[in-house]
Amino acid sequence: MRSNERPTIRNRSSKLGFGMDVDPRQYDNLTVNDNDVRNIVLSYLMHNCFKESAETFISCTGMKQPANYPVDIDKRKPIYNFALEGNALKAIELTNQLAPDLLQKNKDLHFDLLGLHYIELVRMRKCTEALEFAQHELTPFGKQDKYVEKLEDCMTLLAYEEPEKSPMFSLLSMEYRQNVADSLNRAILEHANLPSYSSMERLIQQTTVVTEWLHEELGKDGPPLFSLTSFMKN
Image (cartoon, rainbow, N blue to C red; front, side, top):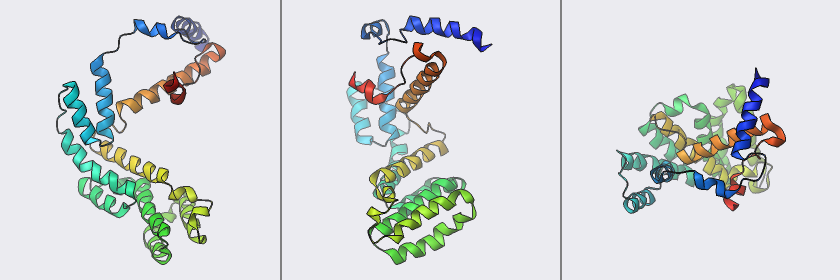
C-alpha cells in the first residue's frame, strides 16, 4: 500500500537532505566519473551536429572517436541547417533521401515543415504564392481535425498587411524555426535507431521528473521543484 511506502521514502529523503537547502559539502562524498561527464558533453555536441566542436573535444580529451559519427553528423547537419534557415523544401528533399518513409509516417512533422515554407513565403510578402502553396500542400491536412486549428493559425498571417503584428506573430520567430528543426533532427535520429535526445537532455528530464514526483509525494518535506536556471546560478 502507498501509506506503507511513504515512511521509507521520507526516511530516505531525510538522509539525502531533502526538505532543506542542501549543503554543497554533501556533494564531496559523491564521485563522478570523468569519462561519464565527457560522454555526456560529446553526446550533446554530436546530437546538435556541432562536428568541429566535437572533433576538438575528442582531440583535447583523448577520447576514442565513436564509430561512424562523422557520417551521421554530415548527413543530419545540412538538413538541420536548412530547416533552421527556413528553407523547409530543401530540408524535406534531403530528409526524403536519407529516410524515405520518415515524413510519410510522421504527418505532424511533415505538416510543420510545409508550414514553415508557407510562413517564409508570407514573411517575404509573397502572398499569392503562399496562398497557392497552402491550397495545394496544406489544405489536404484539414481532413483531419487535429490540423484544422494549425491551418487556421497559418492562414491568419495572410489576413494582416504586417504579419509580424498578427496574433500568430510567434510563427515568424526564430524560436519557432528552432523548434521545427529540433523536432526534425530528433525524428531523423530516432529513425536511425539512435537516441532522439542527448544524454544531457535525458539527465535533465529525469531530474525534473524525479523531483516533481518527490515534491508531490512528500509535500513540504520533499525537495523543491528542479529549475535548471536556478541550478546554474548555484
